[in-house]
Image (cartoon, rainbow, N blue to C red; front, side, top):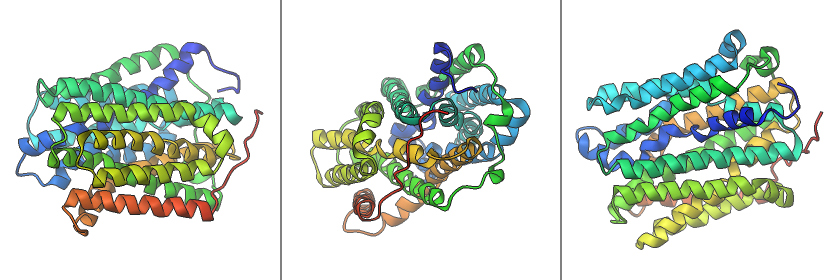
Length: 389
């Protein structure tokens, strides 16, 4: 694509990919219901129903550059959206746990086809502070999309846990939007094989930090339903509404990231980690439902400053081919963090003064605080802000 601004509906269609980038997590609030529905299945495996799509997405994500090089971005994105729509909605028709798990894996294959282009297309089209602002918008739109979907899930779960899976049909509508308004792009400038674009050593550190960052947020999201159930903070519907409000907090952070980054630069990252540590500490220590809900919402708000900062900083100063490679590695980091999260937190949760869920919150608080301190004494790469081409 050229450096000129795209048409309005093209921009809307590209940004629409961000609104469904986290659609695999729309069933997060169902964990207590799924545990009751399948009492013979271990908790870690139940939680994998939420995260297994992220792991299978790794398969198509790794071959995404080759697929887009051969077929073009537009057909690959549309195919991924349609595959995810069918597989995501399948549990409406079955209560067989094995088949549901299989459908979640197929859902991930589709997500791996369209998800990396939510970021890379923005990185190609926009530059400088405008790119930073739109990357913030991308995060915000992802949060808004998740908020709307989770709010709808809070309504549908009253009907049945299976009714929530109707929400995956929205992916088919996004596919139509992309087919209608997104033109094909130049395959030579928008795709590259992962191994062909070498990255500076500092960017590998950013990929590692991205993995840890998302591992921590997965810990909060996966254990929040258990925390609410254990402490009687409300029913399944109120939990889904809290999850939706959390994403609205992320929307606010995304919309304000550009201005905050312009003022704080690398300390934007410190603010995100320190604020998140404080909010998880509140979740760990409170027995009041309103405080827990407020802390959860604040967590997603303040922590949402870390994502766009890591993406923007990692893309600064890179050539087009390197941007594609870096975007793929960042997406891989977020995906594998989702797979390892149930294993890591259910293991670490065995160590501590309380029950598993409480111990996980304590561990997350300590790790976030440690990273916040480290970000002050060991500055992250600030990254010059390029201005156009």
